[in-house]
Amino acid sequence: MKVAELISPPSIFLILALPAALCLGVAIGIFNPIYAAIVAAALVMAIIVLLRLDELIVMLVIAVHILVDSYLGLAVYQIALLMALVLLFACYFGQSANHPWTGPRWVWLWLLFLILTIIPAMKGAAFSLTNSIGYYLEIIFSPFIMFWLGNIIAKDASAVRRVFQWLSFLAALFATHTIIQATTGKFLFESARAYANLLQASNFQIGGGISRVSSFFGNPNGNGIFLATCFFLPLGLFIESEKLWAKMIYLLEMLSILLALMFTYSNGSWIAALTGLLVFMFLVGRVRYSVLLLLLVTVLAVVALTVFPSQVAVQLSRAKDQGNLSLHLGAWQTAMRVIAAYPLFGVGLGNQAYLSLAEHFRVPAQTTPLAEPDNSYLQWGAIAGIPVMLIFLVLLALVFWFSWRNWLAIDTRYRPLFAGGIVALIALSINSLTVDGWTSPVDVQFLGWLIAGVVASPLIGRCLGFQPVSPVDRTAETAHVQAGASWMDKAKQGSQL
Image 1 (cartoon, rainbow, N blue to C red):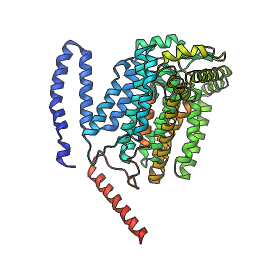
Image 2 (cartoon, rainbow, N blue to C red):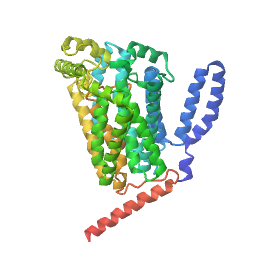
Image 3 (tube, helix red, strand yellow):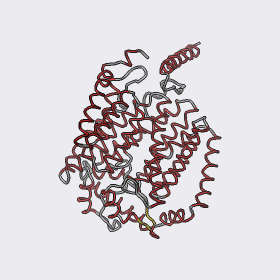
Image 4 (tube, rainbow, N blue to C red):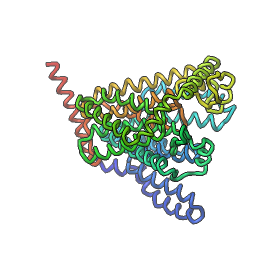
């Protein structure tokens, strides 16, 4: 790498600004520790941006969205979105041969999606301005930014691996928090807002006085969909890795996520996870990996039945609950009646608009008022209209189509890695049939669209080998790309001969 790339004007500015920010933070800390913490966080963020640890930053964006914007109720400040925009600008101004820049895929379709949802946002603002704007930023604009960042960051196999490693680490932390809450009854780092939510929901108790664990997500279904989606990332890393110590780490992450998922007692999440496992066996790339995975699933099933018989019994009992199924079907019927009444632009963005207007169309099977119809796809049609719903479905279909093409283009060795990302999206999409997965402002839309941007990135497959690159030696990466291009040229010449 050239010295000019390391010592660029933005880098010089940041280097000079860091000591000044540190002094400012110390001065502010004397008067208000909260402001000092904000300055310290901004300082750490600047250092990470300066070091171009892009994969770490996107993981922090997702963590901040869940823990700060959603859990602490600070979504009005959109801190996670601001962090994502800072990273996007850093990627643009810091672009180089080792840090390529690319525009978002299907930008015209994304722009149409962003524009058509403005009218539903204005309609929803009549019920709650902050709720409507928050929905627009968190389920429409922020996903566009996260998808774009995923396109940019997935520049080589090492970058994709690091993204999935950081996300798996984050999922393992949330899983550990869930397990501690379920086994001890203690909610670590519980806020007054979370305490009031648990009190209002009677701690999400089901039959037998068993509590479903929500962790930082405010709802067990949100916790379940996050864990079910993230499970396939360490699974892909486990199969793809060639080092025993790394496999052990990924296996521990997988087991902790599955154990935590069990304590959510989420039917939709388990259906999504089991269906995803079947698809993963097909996408893993080699028959022996599929057989190994089948054996692993069998062993885990036997262990679960032996060690956790009561939890398995409760889960099966809940799956047979006809009342829960009837409520879901009723919610879907209500949503379809809302779509028929407001086909173009829906009732308006936000759960306040739907909660108010859907009451006029509620069917008897939906026994309680709901702020959303327990189905992301119907929710798009109900709150934003049929055109927006169709555009969303087209975007999702394009993600799967181009991720499939990328999976075919890469070397067989790395297919389990990408299979983990693709199946994570499949699990999220299946789970969204029973909860507001893709349309929840507090759960996984940041995570889902980041993974979508990674696996559907236009940077993948430009070199047929798609070999991994050491994060330390960027010169080797450039040499590999040149060698790959030369190999392709020679192959073309040979075919012509």
